[in-house]
Amino acid sequence: MADDRFAWISKRAYAIWEAAGRPSGCDQEHWKQAAAERDIMERSRASVDGEELLLRFRQKATPPNPDQALQPEDGDERIMVDRIS
Image (cartoon, rainbow, N blue to C red; front, side):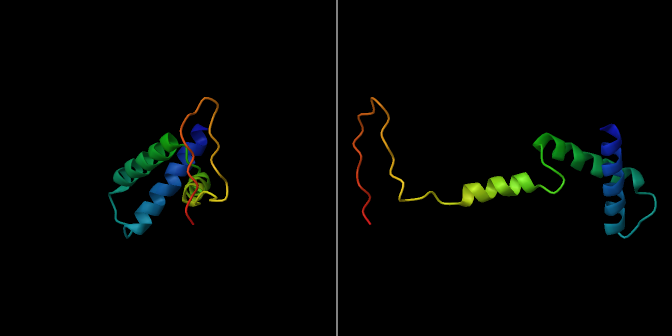
C-alpha cells in the first residue's frame, strides 16, 4: 500500500508541476501539495475517481416518491394528513 501511495503522490506531483508550467526548484512544494491531497482523499475514503461520492450525491438529489405514503409506527399517536394535490 505504501508503494501505491508513493506512486500516486509522484504522479500527482508531476501533474502539478506540469500544470504550473514546469518551473524549476518547486519540486518539494509540488510533492507536499500532492501528499496533502492524498491525505485528504484517504481521510474522506474517496476512491481515485470519486465514483462512490458521486453516487451518494445522486441518491441525495433524487426526490422521494410522493406516491409512497408514510406509515405511523406502533404507538405513534400523530394524525396522518392526506397530501393536497
